[in-house]
Image 1 (cartoon, helix red, strand yellow):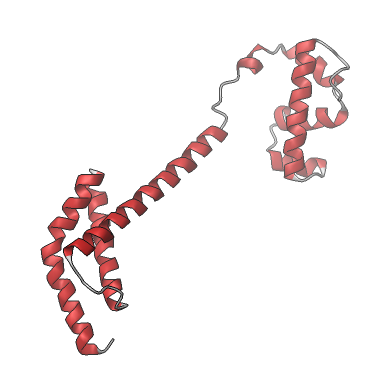
Image 2 (tube, rainbow, N blue to C red):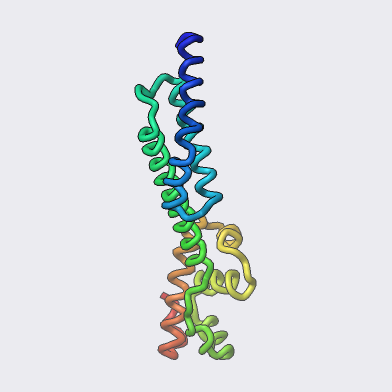
Length: 175
């Protein structure tokens, strides 16, 4: 784009800014109901407009076009927000907040007896993880396994422990 045309387009954006600002901000504020977010999205909208004008990507620079850009910015904001909330839910779900009252009902003496009756691979994994308090990667390193293999081993070991404990079967849990 040559300089006189670029200057004309820049002037058009400035003129449109004064006219469109209340419309764009009002549109966003009425939909997101948060003044700070509406201000940020309004700024993003006008930055996108300037960028589009510089690239000569917009044929007709109007308030309606800016409202469309604002709507797209708002949708992007909602998508980002949903992704963040989904990540937080996943983290919360993985943090162990799932209620399992079974371990509160376990008798310590019986648990040690059942643990002694497990196979050595299950006993080692459970002892390192729950008695020594090592993380799964630390257990994996101690056992010379991958983290994925250790997670699978721990799932099997917990299942074997629970079955043996519930059955009262000393030797049956070493599967």
